[in-house]
Length: 595
Ligand code: M6R
Image (cartoon, rainbow, N blue to C red; front, side):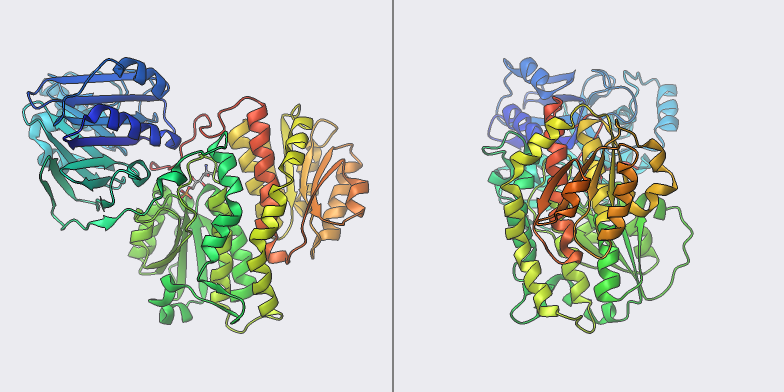
């Protein structure tokens, strides 16, 4: 979603802010802008619609002197169409205040009306512009008190040059602490390689950054190390982040398991849960809350928790949970899954669960993010920054951590426990062998490129896999793809099947294999093309399906980690072959910080 970058220091700020906006491009945006006041109070406001390349052309010959406070923004439209007027930074009536904002000002209509009555002139349709005029009318701190909603704000003043005013409520904002310089960013990824220390602003914290000083309050700012390898935020030799991140799968899973999975001792250790171990023992129901891809990993988690932890588990869409009137029961654990740790719906659900005094746990990838901080305990994915908007490696690592968690809860080790842990440890190698065959998937994507509708089928652990495979295809290819439970197909979707409606079936050798075969027979009988993801050595499927991609055999609860890889690759190749920008698909944002 929108991105914020800012700089105050001895270096020339404009190129720094622009480069940092580039690092935030992955979040999704439709317009962009920068603004600055130098130490003499001379200012510039430059903004444009479209890609950052357009902004780059406009700032090419512009220089910002050292000691100039610069702010920049990439906007993902919420209030008002993507046009130049609605792009950030926004200004007050006289162009003496420039302001960038992430979040939503919920009471902006009434604030706008009252400001218009006081004589303010508005130029845009955005909620954000209200903040610029509020600051003009009342000053920074009093303005914040009038805003209802969420904000991460960075503001610069003509009359107070060389300073950046920052504030956070509900939307993330990070301050990078350098030597005689400060950076501002909505996402710490932008600061990787620039600073080693950061402050993740807490809700309600605000402050002023100038060359040699930083004043943040009311809560004392906590300086934390920034532990993001800048290499990880680069594409390297890959044409797209999405492909790079799929190929990172084996390493990502190894990092998720490292130091936690000990097959030789037959144990799973999760340091992040040690502090709440006593409370965990009393949990008699688990609710898993998440959105999008993280929700689908939660569906796999539900099956894992039932099978290994033997705890009744329910997966809920965070956006729905917020407004449901679920009875609150002591002893319920609430597990929040989020790659970004900033998804507004998931965060709001977490706050509700915290208000209900539930034991809240997290599986989060972004270190220091709001969900990681506000859950009582949790386990980091350690997948590294995920830049592609379509989540791939984060999903895989979520599955890894969920498997570990369900085993951690496992009260009486299930049959073949040690062998199972060994098999889990072998999954990264098996993923590597699938990735070696990626060209086969590319060929299949070419073959199926003519179709505009797809049904994804799976059962058991592979039902969420099918849902996630379908989500990947629709996100980056913009074709209709529907995930369905194999057994449900005959209750409706079968009506869609004909020679123009292919099915991608996850039909590996497991408990429900024969059932899936019957479902596929029903499709074949209606001339539906079938592309199957099947277990190596399965001859039966080759006779039934039009095409088969084979994956190595593994234990059923671990299958999703293997089977999702060809589906991610299929979506990737399909999207790129159709000429789409798969790293930044239309209308989508990496971190959805609005409801
Ligand atoms: O950062 P989160 O895991 O909380 O994000 C949740 C969803 O917004 C996210 O998974 C979304 O569905 C992705 N675009 C999936 O590729």
